[in-house]
Length: 133
Image (tube, rainbow, N blue to C red; front, side, top):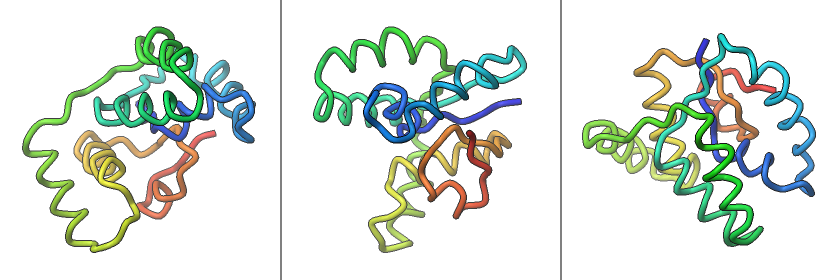
């Protein structure tokens, strides 16, 4: 099984004061450690997570993100086709939510047949995906 990892989950892992931190850590240490679960994300999520972490938590949190969490992920790189497809969906919706990064995530998940997201962002559920934990 593959589970997509969103920036909302990465931030919850990094921020010990986040109300979802314990749930995120428990899922990652439990089901997320199952060797049959492949954790997938993309480079836009990593960039978004690093920007959020440095702004709210500081550079030490970014070091943890990049040195501890990212190496455990299968990070895919957004190509031109995926980017343009997400931009089209984003502009077509005419709304701030979901974000462009989320639109890229949804497009990628659909193209790879990934139905579950390690995420605390309700937009994933609104798009028909299952969220864990």
